[in-house]
Image (cartoon, rainbow, N blue to C red; front, side, top):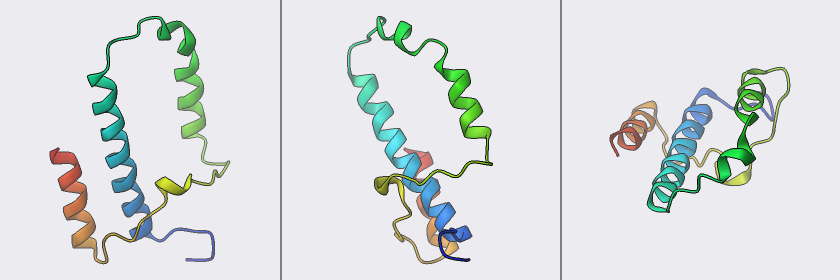
Length: 88
């Protein structure tokens, strides 16, 4: 791919990285006590977030911790990592 454009393998790697991080964040959040007062702070933001995610006309640079890691060299290795993340 041209500079600044990810290959299919880099995209798959990114999916694994993001799912690993999101899963860890969810686990951490679930261990903490509930904070019902936060509901008011985020009210209405869900629709805005969904619109932003679905709008592919605007490209956003991924934060460094979410960039592809190159942790797998073959499609089979990426598939195994993906399945491992989903199994946890």
